[in-house]
Structures are given as C-alpha cells and as structure tokens.
Amino acid sequence: MVSKALVITNAQGFHMRPASVFAGAMAKFPCKVFIKFNGNEYNAKSPLNLMAACMKCGSEIELVCDGDQENEALAAAAEMIQNGFGE
Image 1 (spheres, one colour):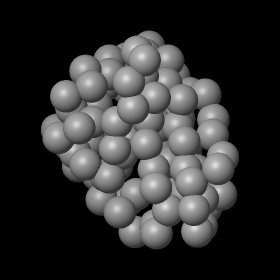
Image 2: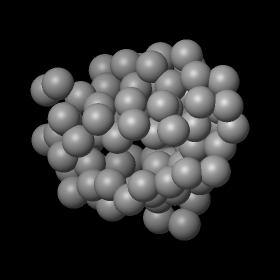
Image 3: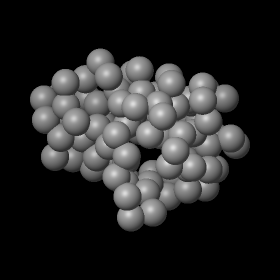
Image 4: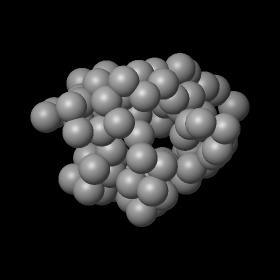
C-alpha cells in the first residue's frame, strides 16, 4: 500500500467532469484506489463517490493505492490532481 497527501488545486474541485475523467483513469489499474477526506474513505474509481465527497479547491486529501500497479496508479493520480485535471 502506498499513499500521498495532496491538495485539490483546480478551482471547481471534483465536479462532474474531473470526477469522471479521474475515475476512468483509475479504473485502468487493477489495484484499489481510494481517497481519504474528512475522516471518510471514497472509492476513487466511482465518479459519484468523488462528487459526493464535496472536495473543493484547497481540500487536503490522502490518496491511497493498494495492490498490483499501486505505484503507477499513485503517480498517475497525483499528476492529475496536481495539474488541476487540465482545467
């Protein structure tokens, strides 16, 4: 299991488009991917879970990957978040 603390940087947070793009990208990895935020864990492969978490710009999260290709998944997810989902 690997994890990384990150801050959501895009102005709108995890709204519909970035949640869908992010979940789709994470679905390509066989490992479990989840986000810890405000004491809860959210399945990062589910756009609805990501939107329901209400993660806004400036939200501090912990990204966790566990299983096969966990390092690759963590690197890809961190890059997407740090780049603000290209917005």
